[in-house]
Image 1 (cartoon, rainbow, N blue to C red):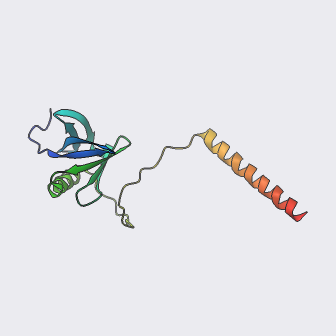
Image 2: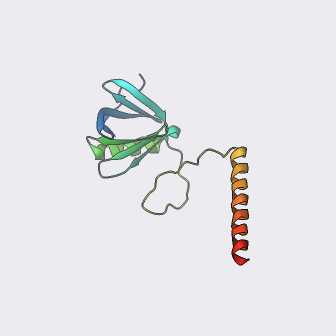
Image 3: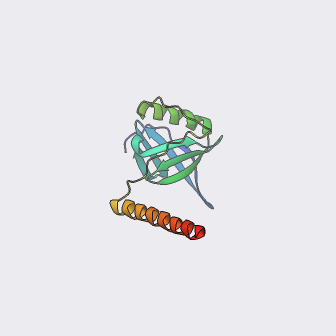
Length: 139
């Protein structure tokens, strides 16, 4: 296993009514998630995001899942996470962030051509029915 000298940050991940004890460690640009010595996942910096969602809670977004992580030592984890993210992350863009939430919003998948065609047909049909209803009110 790579990064055997890494510091593990222990805590729990909430799954609604269940909690699982886990450890998170940073290995350069990789984040490792383990439980009871078994590897749950390894993600490189481009495939996960980690945001603080409270004083002692962090949200790990990876593989279309949002995992709520509560470390035993939140401040120590926050420092390690920021070091790991600063070392591995690409330089941030200089865009202005507004509001309280600074989470990244990933663009969704492109619409398929048939979806666009059906959407525009629906719009045209709705406009035609609206015009017909308006004309019948006038007559």
